[in-house]
Length: 198
Image 1 (tube, one colour):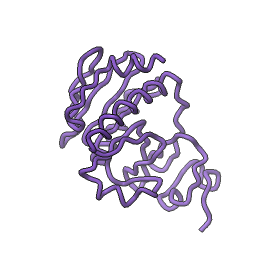
Image 2 (cartoon, helix red, strand yellow):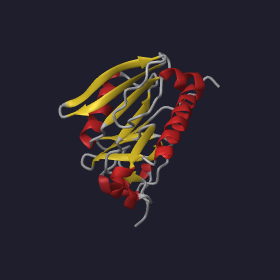
Image 3 (cartoon, helix red, strand yellow):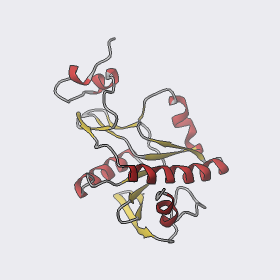
Image 4 (cartoon, helix red, strand yellow):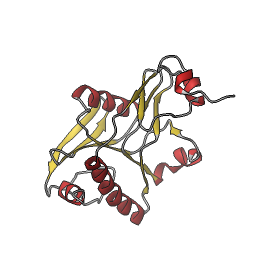
């Protein structure tokens, strides 16, 4: 079966079947109810913060054999019809749930929840956009979400409860992040943001 390109689909709209045949012509996107929504190009500051987090989380997870940390670009399917996907900046897949994701290593998408999602906020991330993402991550079953604000140099930690996410607060400076997923992690916003200065 031939691969579909975005231009071959109805105007910027994809069904599940078309999505499976789609050749990704974009670098970063999410699909909201079938509509392909390109994400803006990230800044160097965004990339530095992301790199800082990746290095620290990878070192912690690898040293303890807890699982694996991955970066975008990678799709998580929230639902097939109407099609919704998200691409978190960073995500953690635990070894404890390896049977769920290991068989899909060669797939360009997952329909199982990561244990932790990290989103580095940009000016394009309005309140409504953030709320929509959190609703999708909750529907998928993500246990914990970090919202990282490079401008304010703060990080919010949110934990999943039955009705939605509960914020444990915004943390800055030398306040340790109270993660429930990466137990034992000693990480402060100051470490993340100072390392991202260059």
